[in-house]
Length: 129
Image (tube, rainbow, N blue to C red; front, side):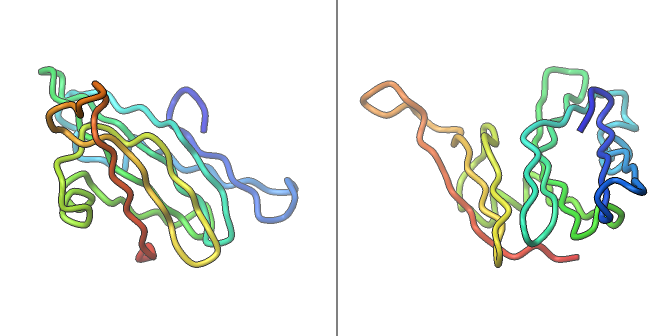
C-alpha cells in the first residue's frame, strides 16, 4: 500500500503487477472526505487492508478491504464490523489474514476501564468474495 491508497500485488514473484485503488472502493470519498489505508496484511486467504475515512466534518469511519487475489476487492464497512462484534467501534488497530479466517482487533467506543484504557474487541470470520 502506498501513500495514495494504491495496493500493488503480484501472483508471479513480481513478473507482473496488479494495482487497486482503495480510495475508489468507498462511497465516503465521493462526498469530499479523505481516505487513508494502513495495516495491510497478507496471508493464505489473501490480502486485508484497514481503511479509514474522514467525512470532512470531523466524522471518522473504518472499513476493511479484502482481496483473495489482489484484483477483486470487497469492503466490510464499520456498521458490518459493529454488528459482528456487538459493540460500537472506535478504531481498528490490526488485521491478521490466516489460513481459514481473518481476525480484526480494535478499540471500542465506550467508557474507559478502571485502568484508563478503552476496551478492545476481536472479530474473526471468513471474508466473502
